[in-house]
Length: 179
Length: 144
View (cartoon, each protein chain N blue to C red):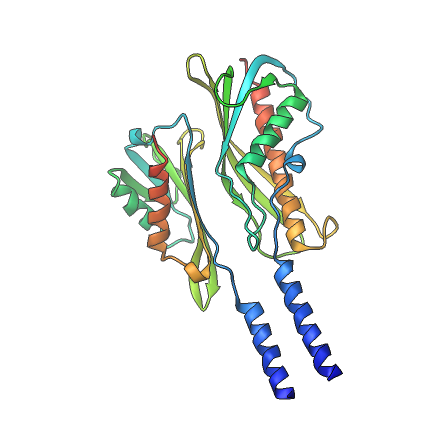
C-alpha cells in the first residue's frame, strides 16, 4: 500500500510541477521603467500618453506587456527624467504621445532568452495637430540562466529589459526635438 | 491493483503533457495620425523563405481595393505603404500557423502605421488564409 501511496504522490507532484511551471506573469511596470535616464532637454509643456498593441498575460501564456503597464512605465520615465513638466490624463495636454507595440518576438526554448521588440512612437502637438515625431523604435532584451533559473521568470526579465531599452530610446528621440 | 495504479499513472501523465490550453488572441491598432483609406498602393515585402503567406496577404489587400505588388527586394518608388509580416509556425500532428503579425509601414521611414496580430494555438488553429483574413480585417476595423 505504501508503494501505491508513493506512486500517487509522485504523480500528483509531477502534475503540479508541470502545470504550475507554465504559469507566466506579465511584465512589471516598475521593471520596464528606465531609472537612470538623463535627458538634455526639459520641455515646458504637459504631455498625455496613450498606448496600444500590448496584451494581457494568460495563465498558460508567456509574458506579455499590458497597455496600462506600458503607459505607466512611460509616464514614470517622463516624470523621473523631467522631460515634460507634467503628465495629464486624457485630453488637455500640450502634446499627445502615442506608443504602440507592433512586435514582441519571444523565444520558445533556450538557456539565454533574447526578446525583440518594436514600437511606433508618434508625438502630436495638440493646438494644430502637427505630428512632430514619427519613429519606429526597435530594441532587444536578454536574460540568462544566471538571472533566473525558471524559464517563465527568465522570459519576463527579457521582456522587461526590451521594454526598458525601448522606452529609453523613444524618450531620447523626443529629447532631440525642438518643440 | 498494481495494474490499476499503472493505468492511472499513465493516464495522468498523458493528460498533463498533452492538455495544451487553447490560447486565442487577435489584436490590431492604427496610429492616430494614420489614414488607411488614403493608402491606395502597397508593396508586400516577401520573406525569402516564405512560399505562400505573402500572396495571401496581397490577395486580401486587393479585396480591400488596394493595388498590390510583391517582392523580396526594396520597395519600388511611389508606393503609399510597405507591408511586412512575421508568421510563426508550430508542429502538432501537422504544421500550423501559430501567430501572424502584419505591419503596414510608411515607405520612407519604416514607421508602422498599422499593426495586426493573431495568435491561435493548436486546438483552435486557423488555416493560413483565415489567419490573414482575421488580421487584415482587424486592421481595417481599427482604421478611421
